[in-house]
Image 1: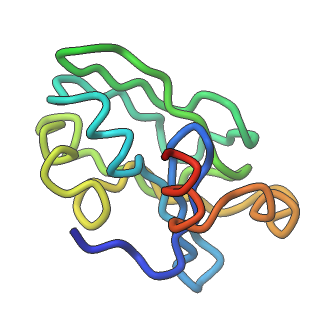
Image 2: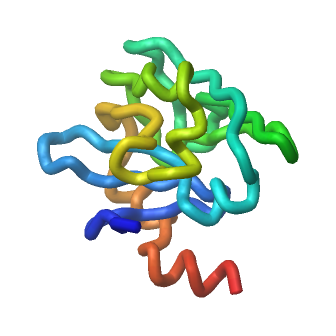
Length: 128
């Protein structure tokens, strides 16, 4: 599995990656996907929708459970990975490269909001 270098994770198992152009890619961590098991349904937001940090922006269902997905930093949706709606099992195969959920433009205080997130290594340690 290819872990993005500058990835930050939330305690609720979402990740963000700074794309370097004032946009971020948002998705679910490998741990979250592992816990959910086989993904069967995914509901994603519309483009141009704004969410505050911590708000539910998507819903995911697996053979085991249904779960809400929370926005790790405040932002406006600028791209949605619509292919996942038709093939949600892609998340089980590759949650980082092809399994990203949305891309956002930050709308809040990015530095403050990012400071509350964990680097992947620290995130993994918290899980143990």
